[in-house]
Each structure stands twice: as C-alpha cells, then as structure tokens.
Amino acid sequence: MNPFSKKSTFLLGSLIGSVVGLLFAREAGKNLREKLQAAKTPQKKFEALFQEYLKAGKSAVEEAKKSESLRELVKGGKEILAELQKKAEKEGGSAVKFAQKKAQEVLQEMEKQVSDVKKVVKKEVAKKKTAAKKLVITKAKSQIKKVARKVAAKKKTIAKKKATRRVTKKK
Image (tube, rainbow, N blue to C red):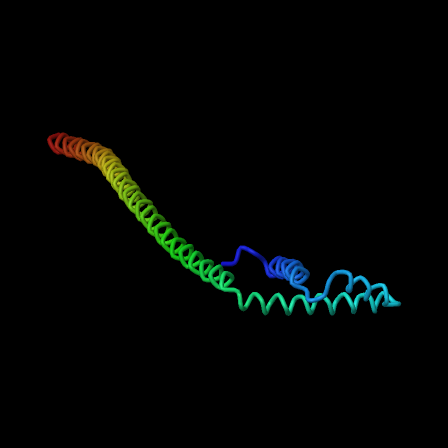
C-alpha cells in the first residue's frame, strides 16, 4: 500500500532530480544562463533548459546509483515497509478475530431469543388450545342440555299420550 499517488511520486521525484541535478551539474549556472540568452525563440530556450535538466538528471541518477547511503536508505525503507505490512496483517487478523467473536455472540443471542419466542408461542398455543377445548366442551354441554330438555319434553309428551290413552281405554 503506497501512501503516495503516482502523480505525487512523479512530481516529488522530478523536483528532487532537478535540485540534485543543479547541485551536481557539470557546468556552472553562468553557462546555462548564457545558453538561454543565446536562444532566439522560446522553443529554443525550452530545449536548452530541457537539455540541461536532462544532463543534470542523468548525472544525479548515476551519482545516486553509486551512493551507498541511498542504498541503505532504500534498504531501511523496505524493512520498515515489511514491518508495517506484518503489523497490518497482525492487526487485520486480530480485527477479523474480534469481528468473528462478536458475530458469534450476536448469533448466540439471536438463537436464545428465538428459543424464548418459541417457548412463548408454545405457551400461547397451549392456552388457546385449552380455551378452545373449554369452549368446545361448554358448547357440547349446552347442546347436550338442549337435547336432554327436548328428550325430557318428548318423554313428557309420550307419557301424557299414554296417560290419555289409558284414561280413554278405561272409560
């Protein structure tokens, strides 16, 4: 993961190269100014300046390649980058473990709540079944009483008819 964008790295490199190039330039600034004054058109001035920067850049690159301190700096930077990468992986791994642990806790809590809801639903269903049974039993008793009254009424009617027939036969 590079903290610099490609553009900013390029611009920073260009700036450093220009400064180093001017510092290590083989010609004095006076000669560069003379070349710029001798150029007649802006294009020629630009070309002269560009050539000077190109020479300076090449010379700076050569000097940098030879520089032991630059190699050490690059080596140190690679080591730091490797350490940061390991730390990021470690921290990332612990973050993943933490997230997994929390997800497991949430899952367990949800399972507990689902279990509690199931228990409540079973109780409510049992209550409704009991209420429904009571209602059915009450209606059945009511129907039985009605039927019993009708049967009793029929028996009375039959008994009256029998009594009427007996009385009629005795006469």
